[in-house]
Image 1 (cartoon, rainbow, N blue to C red):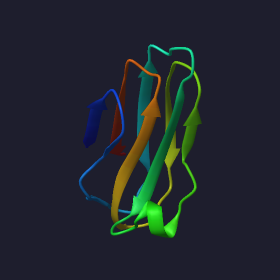
Image 2: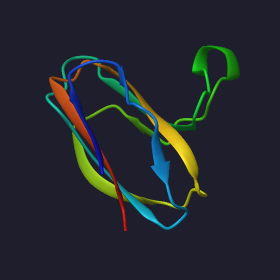
Image 3: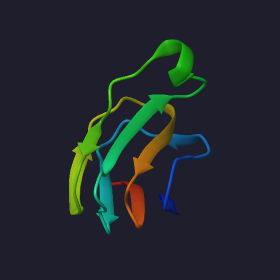
Length: 95
């Protein structure tokens, strides 16, 4: 299980996914006047500033939810960009 807790931008360490389903749980709280959150799940060594990426999630308000991931076996990392939230928590757990 990989868990990140923060109140602004953060990237995780790389972690292994086995190819079985995984659960992504997220909680973004305390939206201000302008809140924007994006969640990326990228293959290891991907540089979003060079390679670009498509967000897995995009948020503009408080939200607590889960979604299933169907990524192949490999190493990945999470990159979360968040502005205008008091805090957020993100968890990836293999099923």
